[in-house]
Amino acid sequence: MTRLSGIIMMKNIGKMALVFLLTVCLLTGLLIASAFIPRAAIAPQMRASAEFLSQGEQFAPVIEGVNSTRIDRYADSILLGIVWQTDANDALRSVLEARYYHNPHQKETINLLDAVEQDLPANQQYLRYWHGSIVPVRLLMTLLTLPQIYLWHGILLAALAIALEIRLLRRKAYVPAVGFAVGLVGVGCWFIPLSLEFTWVFLILFVQLHLVLLPSFPKDWRKRGLFFLVSGMVTNYFDFLTCETLTLLLPLLFLLWLDREGNLPSIKTLLKTALAWAVGYGGMYLAKWALAGLVMGENPLPYVTSHVGERLVGSVADMNLFQEALGALSRNVQYIFPMDYGIIGGLIGLGLLIAAAYAGYVYHRKGFDKRRVLLYAALGMAPYVRFLALINHSYLHGFFTYRAQLATLFALALILGELTGWGEKQHG
Image (tube, rainbow, N blue to C red):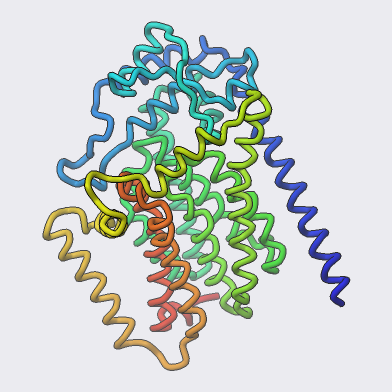
């Protein structure tokens, strides 16, 4: 039996390795293909987009004084700069290096405009990320300007979210339907389409959740590893290190709730599933750096590791590590809607939390599944582990990393549903 188990394990590892390699080849191929879209085809739209970005601040809030409504025009300018400089000549090197024009003495929004209007060559590389969003942006920009892409993303995200809610309600899955809606409100979903950087994780997530709800989705947890492996890879390919853990935590939470009629998976099984996602996500970084090193003929790790160290424990003003960690946590929590909307918003948010805790305590039923509650809670707390693991990044960019707490809010809804039994009789 032990030998048979070992053979099965090796076959599974081999299958996952093959899927990983094929996915890397496919995604790299898409980047290369996007480089062959002629610059002339995107030039008018790119010029209009650069003018649009140059007219605003790089990190201006939509609502004055509300930091959670800040929009990242800085990252969007860099992405468009890479899109503009991507070249079919030596296409593989071009998409791996991800070069753009940079002048350290002015804003990136102005750098983009200068590069487009003056045809300035790239002088800066950004190879540590895949920048897979080059593919859809370069394609969309043959027809649309950046504001139009924002609008298109908003329509697409809204359609996917509404369709998901309808599917949940038809299945009488009222607890996850309410929890997901509350979670989206809590992370200010209406601001997500206003920046390309914010959009990719949520597009991936919504597609994931629709797949999870398919009747044909594997019921055996051992067969779900490939789904999470590819999910981690695709997340790394598109995301700019925003709220990447959502594509692991939300599908896991959905699956735990949807599998409520069966036996709960063991901790070991859940860890293996999470590991598959982590291997996909982390493996994509390694694949990018290795491929870039081979193509460029130099070691990219010194450049990469310096930036990794900055994200982990880079200094903020005169703060020590403890103060920065506390600040990272408090900022991300504070940005949950409506906590960031002044004293009134903070009181409303606190009141809602107290009301939820009161309902769970007073109306909890006998015989609720303690193990299920603990699993929900563990997954809901995972974003805070991420905030502490990337302290500097979570502190400085809390205005978008806070959206990882969609998993926390959703987990709280599932916990409340399990404690009170609400929606269970209706579940089918």
